[in-house]
Length: 86
Image (tube, rainbow, N blue to C red; front, side, top):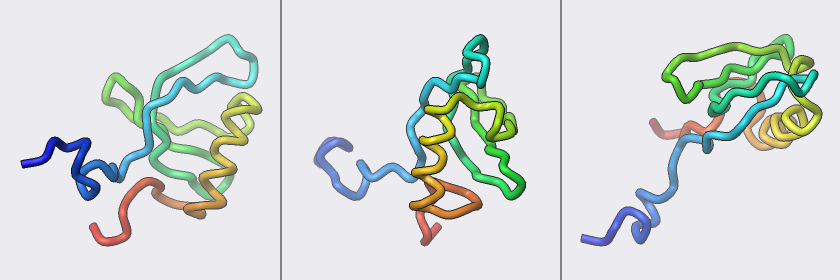
């Protein structure tokens, strides 16, 4: 059997990668994965400690806001990184 990296169907993860998120002051950082772009300008992150947190977009650093903006253009609002045929 091919390794997971060699199998195009298994390699296509339905989750976004973990990344370092920074707040708008630059003082606070968490590692997490974007799981949802919510109405009202909030994002839901799955943190590396296994817990979820919801953060207002305007509390994110400019770079993080741009990252979310690019994903919103791809996925729209709602749950992101999930394959359509669950």
